[in-house]
Length: 263
Image (cartoon, rainbow, N blue to C red; front, side):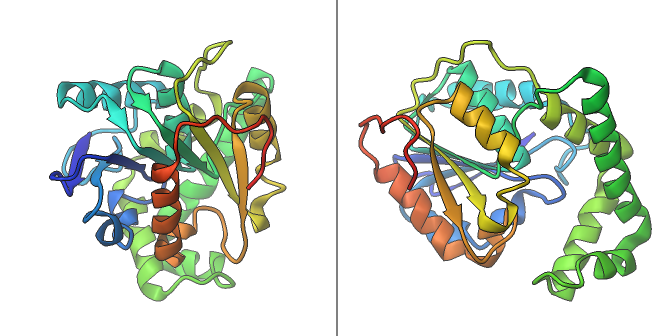
């Protein structure tokens, strides 16, 4: 796992963890907006790392490896830990491990472990694998049809196609199998003072189980809904807004919100 750093001269650490089917440069529009104020840590997750050969491992292993790296580099405090979709899964596990003090955290459309029978969860993973693998085989023409009604340019679709070409079948399978079924402690204890779960208004139905999981296992979490975007759309479509929201979380003083609050 390659770790990219920006603004190393700044004191407050912000960690940005990308979703699946993109690389770390998913944050290319956000990094310039934050690097002057924050020390940015942007990991290229295994299987999505152009600089290192290898496949996706697991949510648990990635969270542990990231904590190992941060502690080895003297980073014991994080101002904001932001993870989107797959990155939200890593964020949840990182918080549960509680090895690095996180003052504020955001799970943006984060995937939580399915609370379903084993055979059902593997069936869902297989379905998701086949969808993405067919996109890998179909190339740019299939992507143009699949995303015909979305706000993606030809350049965006070419980027997605290049990422799919980079992803091995093992990475595709492990991504969905692990994000849907990663292990978590029965009782989660974290020092995080501010935990927010974000979702797009258009995906509220799809995030129903995730929101319920957060309410049960992270009762301190607060929820924020965004309009005018789809799943994981902030970094690409509204980078200024994402930067502002991350700054807000970093500025949050350690005052615990009331259980079940919304913002």
